[in-house]
Image: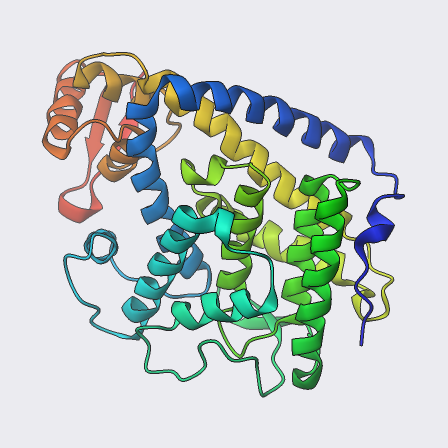
Length: 348
């Protein structure tokens, strides 16, 4: 079985790009702590939006989808699942909530990972929840034309339980000694987890949930307010490329984790930047139309009403609609299409 020992990270030299990304994230993290004390009302709204976006995006990467309306109803527990996809979406919702509310009390151990995987399939007819894989699986990519391509062959089923145990033990030793930067250690651990691919299904979603858990436990809590999963979904081709390049030589311990470390650090930094932009934009007490105007000014190309509502979570649906109509009258934006196909573009 492949050896898992994260001590090697302590003596490794990282290039200037990684060092710059880590330094910038540290700066944003420090400023975020100030925002958390000063603007709690705005932040509460961002949390609910981020949870819905994370649930939708992480499942969408795996081809598990439903409508925006159904996602919100499922998340608010105002309906019951209609099909297999919605059952798995509800499971993700529950696990994400568990992490949000209890991350301090969820240690990085294989037994807890199994429990989280069990809950991921709590509403599903599948009997795979909380069990390691019993057949060989593959890391595959779904291309834009719908075809799938194998990117990586993970460990065999008999190796998976011991590998997860070893990776967790090594991670905990490394994080406890404080000699390895968590922002380096976390992507390396997540990449190893994906290369092990310990479950018959749900590995990608579990990896993203574990990313959230590990970041929170190291006090990088930006994912509470800005969906990291949504950013990964929007860059999923780069996500798969980074996994593939970092996986070359993985089975014999000769791989270079740099591409995946850089990818995830860029995602985290992007989330921190968006967090500050959102809080600065909507932290002031302004009329709804001015908040919507600020959101519109941030958009390039076409955008929808739902996107504006996500950017301005403190503004209700009716107020957003009224504000968009006013901006149309002022010739600030233009409406295109009708009904569900409606979108807007800026005129200036």
